[in-house]
Length: 373
Image (cartoon, rainbow, N blue to C red; front, top):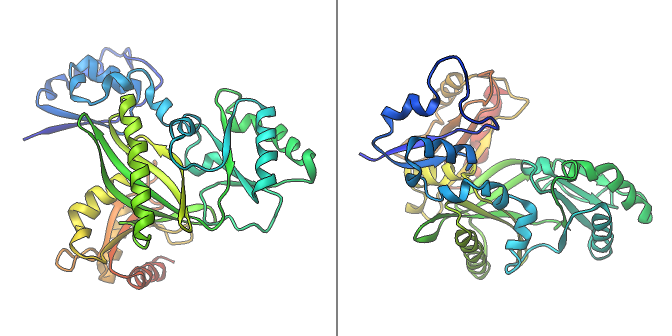
């Protein structure tokens, strides 16, 4: 039976990790890796490359030599992305290396558009995004961005913004900063691929739903796009993913985009195992098998901050009591995905709902809200 090493090594320290006389981690697990046929890294860190090299199984991690050069930083950089994506539609904008670059870019964009998105090269999803405009009433809730800013009048407002935020945006001058058009009323979607030595293949299309600039739901498969838009989106995303493959990247990669009318622009590539990989790969494709029914969807949510906190076992008990736990016979209901991540087992819980209609989803969320609210 094939064996997979799920590598979760991610540290700035180098081996050995301790001086207590205990064996290094690589030596401690060496007897157990003889049957490993594949290495799956949650993050493609050079530390994982060193780890599998010490174990003598680097050949079982596709792309090991690429990741050993800290290439995960390159392929997950917002700045690099705009260069790699030059042949596909991207938002009007620039990669900036200095405050002067950023000031000029923002001034030019605001002469053409209502708002801009400032992006850190490495920032952790929405926590690295800031929406900037001159309109305090601009609708921004549909997008992922932790911060917003309303500029003061004229060029002085732009200069003051960068005086205050350049250090944050550039991580103290270490990385470039992206300044690009913010697209109002857009739909956030993704096309996730898997790259191996044979090439890249599409795994799934999905939709990201934001409320007050925070990700609240994720739906697979993506529905509702006009066939012509979908086909063009998939073709462009495939060309983008193929470029990353030619660089040497292997593994999951998600091409994120926003759709506005009949047009779309790509916003980033996440070259890693993503928060979507399990949603479609395990829950959508294996448990629910969404493609057996033309209207079957899986929506991933998280328990809301105002709800009563329960641990994972308590959440499962609530699902059973309400009668809304996943039923393999009907292929509908709630799958509890992950417990609260952190030291305290009580807290937000990620869950996924298999349903046919939005009404079914809303009714179940309302049930959970009443039980835990």
